[in-house]
Amino acid sequence: MRQPFFIQRVVRKIDKTLSSIFFLDQWVIMAGKDISRDSLQWSALRPLIPDKDRYWADPFIFQRENNYYVFIEEKMYATGRAHIACLTLDEDGGLLSNQVVLERPYHLSYPFIFQLRGEIYMLPETAANRSLELYRCAHFPDQWQLIKTLMTDLYVVDATLLEHEKKWWLFANVKEEGGSSLDALHLFYADSPLSDQWTPHPLNPIIKDIHSARPAGRIFSLDGELIRPSQDSARRYGYVLKFNRIMKLNENEYEEVIVSEFRPQGGKILATHTFNQAGKLTVIDAIIRRIK
Image 1 (cartoon, rainbow, N blue to C red):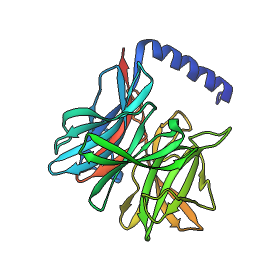
Image 2 (cartoon, one colour):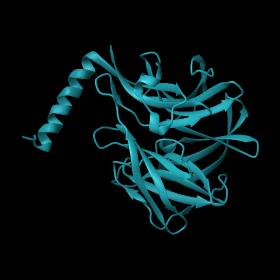
Image 3 (spheres, helix red, strand yellow):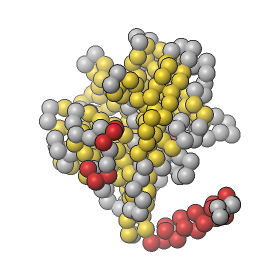
Image 4 (tube, rainbow, N blue to C red):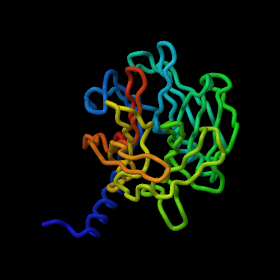
């Protein structure tokens, strides 16, 4: 017989409290070669594990020559605030070095990286500053200059850009008064990703569902179809990766359908909520359970 919902909540809370005494649930990065969305397997991914005083999450890849540069959120437990770091990986996904590349007096995460007309840009999450800030790379990979604030007085998380049919589309979850940042996907469009005039889509929020709204990485093309990775946070924050096929995307319509998912392994791996690819390398993040 299924337990009532309130009993399930109590049991989960007790389990979380007891676990926190003996274990550290830590976000880490996992990397693998020659893996697609359809062939994702935990056994094919190599864990890159930080020290126990921090976590690594939200990986985005930029490939340059024979190395991969994985930009991540690095959160220090002591301060409770994150900055952007860069992990340099070799062509097999082995860690060569890591360094801090962008710090602000507020929390940073989800370092969306893109290239335009020979310049490299980063659109990190700066929701703690109630803004959406755009940075240009002055020296790769460790020097970034703030060049424009795309949105102000708005709590925007996990902003994800897509160029499609001569327009730039910006997908992001927006936390409104009394609401959550987990369940409301908003869409905006402009003629350039450098614009500070983004038009809200008339159907906003285009997705209102904690199972699939929040972005989880770069939108990619597969067999001629656009696939949008997203998070399912129904059970816990960032629990499952969902992959959604975009069926309609224009100034008046938006439609997508969930086509697959990637779930945590259970036991040691508790959650996963970001998926990105470049060249032959795939990276995700995952919560692993470690003994304190």
